[in-house]
Structures are given as structure tokens and as C-alpha cells.
Image (cartoon, rainbow, N blue to C red):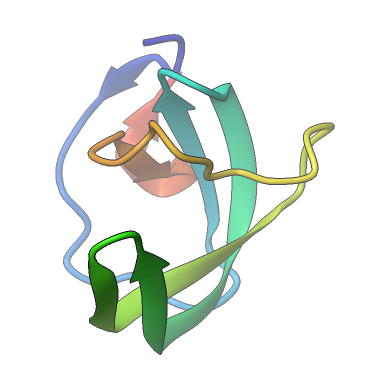
Length: 84
């Protein structure tokens, strides 16, 4: 996946935590947690869905975004739960 060996699961995540993600569309990207309690409506061709208690991640790498279509289910790891 390009993110190294993942060790453990974070009990909780906090605003400001640096994260890394490996996705099919974006490859490996880095970001920082901006919100941990985001409720957001997403429009789909079949209607609108509400996602509750989501996290918002801002890019801190070269790429302007960390998440794009095609990366759902990609692992999002904090630097503290990832071993290099």
C-alpha cells in the first residue's frame, strides 16, 4: 500500500493529528484532521445522503486533496499508529 506496516488501532483521533492514506485513485497522500464531528449531505444521482460524525481531513502534501472518488474504504492511519 505504500504506507508501511500498520500496527494497532487508534482508540480516538484528535483535531490536528497528522494522517496518511493509501487509495486506488490518489495513491499515498498526507493530511491533518480538521474536524471530528462533521455532519455532511452528499448528493448522488439517486438522491441525497446524510453522513453523521465524519472526520474532515485537510491535505498537507503536494496533492491539493487527500480524498477523491474511488478511495472509499482506504486505510487512514495516524503517524502514531503506523510503523515506518
